[in-house]
Length: 412
Ligand code: NIG
Ligand code: FE
Image (cartoon, helix red, strand yellow):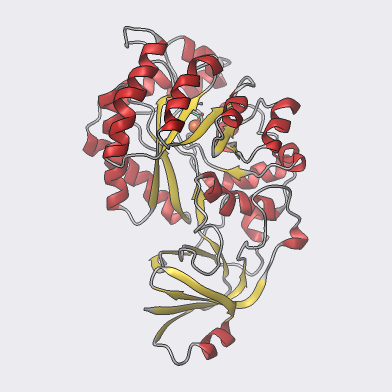
């Protein structure tokens, strides 16, 4: 079935930009009085609304006519979340504000390990319910593609439970959930054998099941003092790579080093980078790894932002994701976080919008979304305003009033 949506007061297709490098606002394409022609779940064309209507008059078209002021753009993509978890870490948050650091809390038995205990207590059905609750909030905020990590199970059985819950939530939601296996989040202290033995067991026993059950095509690892070192993680990532998984890395969050691993294993993305120095920035700039800034973690922990301006000026791309998790990033509001990162890092409007749309899709190895173009999925959002700059200016307080997933209106 054909459908035309419009007219949008302004439409931002976000096409014509590279995945790497700075973007100037002068280069941002803004179409006035525009429409989108859709067939089933895919975009066929965008252009002047009246011309689209005229050129499609021989087709049987449903016209979704918009009234009032509407700014249209691609629906957002959140390329890094941990929204499958049990419990809360409000206690850690209060402790951090009282002066303890994230790593100190982790060392004394809190942190990620605490969430592992709380997540293991939940059934697959409970976990699925929790994911869907958070996914629905993201959908209402205009985010239709959401990456979701495991990593609070940390045994073959518990990681499988998480990934099966993510798969069930994906089946029950209109959103596209992109699962990632983060069995290398931290070394589980109840394991009983060495770190090397743990990683070997995960890669030998868990990876094949991920393939068999189509549970994840992406492997993530947290490279950090309280997690895994470059050396220790190497055989694990080599195995993942050899089996055809995409690699993504929690890199340089508190200390530099993870981005070296990301570049070495040609990861699709290196995420965090708050502690990256000129050395890591130069390495990333020479590679095709997509840096992912997680301002929600900086705000949640109270630490510096990812050096987004320096990265872009060095020639890297930049995706921006929420990192929504119970520990470091409890807020989970991507648009607010991206807008705030923009003010602190002096990012152009185009760079911020690219970071939460097509560059975030590229961080997930997806090129069929995050831009309004022929053959892209018809995932579209509209904001009730007359100037696209209002979207970041209102720092998340102006949300989309219309959201389409695969051409279907899901929120009005
Ligand atoms: O991306 N840094 C490691 N993992 C998460 C935090 C997870 C947690 O604290 O529960 C992050 O910040
Ligand atoms: Fe994370």
